[in-house]
Structure formats: C-alpha cells, structure tokens
Image (cartoon, rainbow, N blue to C red; front, side, top):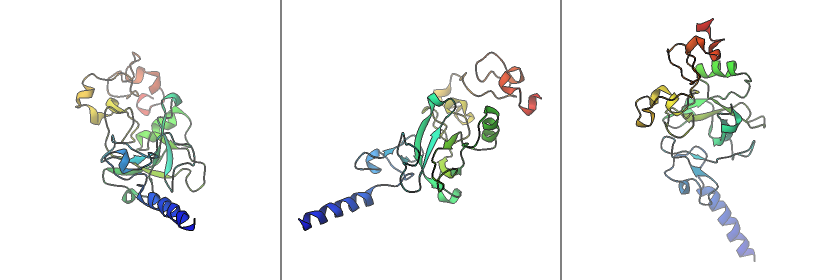
Length: 204
C-alpha cells in the first residue's frame, strides 16, 4: 500500500517536471503537455506553449492571462502569456510589452497603440500579476486573425504583411490611418474626412 502511494507521488512529480513552461518553444502540442492541458501555438515564432481560453488568475506559475482584441469583445481571445520584466526575459524574436487594461476610450487605446503598447490587456486580478508585462512576438503572422507583434494591427492591416500572398487584395476593415490617403476601414471616408480621425492631431 505504501509502495503504491510512493509510485503515485513519483509519477505526479515526474509529469509536472516534464511539462513545458508557458512561453517555451515547441513544434506541436505534445511538446508542451502530455495530458493536453497546454497547446503549441505554431503561428508564433518557433512555437509558443500556452493555454487558450484562460480565465483571470488561472494561468500557471507567473504567467499571465492576456485578452487580445478586447474591443469589440465578441472577437476577443485569451491566452496564457509568459511574464517578463524586460526584453532580456523573452526568447529571441519576442519583446516585453504592456497591455491596455487601464484604458477605456477608443482614443486612449489608439494613442497607446501608436506608442507601441500591445492591443491586449492582462485580465488577472491578483496583485502580483495585474498590470504586468508579457512576452509577445516581434513578427506578424498574416493569416491567423491575431495581432502577433502587438502593434494594434491585425494580419493584412499590418504594413509588414503588404507583400504577403494572403494580402494581395487590400483589406478594408483596418483602423483608419489619418494621413495615408486611403480608406482603411472601408466606410467611404478617407483620412481626416473619417470621423475616426476627428481627434487625431493631424486633423485638428
């Protein structure tokens, strides 16, 4: 009886030791977890071990539950992300970024994104996690519906995707750029004629 209990304890410790951490590189989900708890996001550079659909304060260890594209809420996605204090804490091809959890209005969000913040927010409530920074990709996957490089622009709306085959047809659902002479959001209004640019400094 005692021997059997030791086997169970040993097995539990062994499985925990074999499980990859959030943010580790991977080729497939079995690299991240043998019990399918974690998945490999292969759209990220060299793969990214994560848990999709996390709730506040449920991500393991010091990892953070990050909600991407939270405006509008119906298109948001949640992933556990590796917490960081500086660029040096992140893997190659990743950078340490902050979220937008303290911002409320579209104008505040747009201004923060232009300053380099992620179009995402940390939704954890615990004091040791709320408002912390996380490792996000420096590059953009142009077909996965996410803002991988955390610059506020998704897929073909990101200038880095302009030469990709998937973006041969210019998108019409992007945030309005107020000085590029294009109707980025497809509402029929260009630059300063678009109401989205009413508070942009170039249009005042």
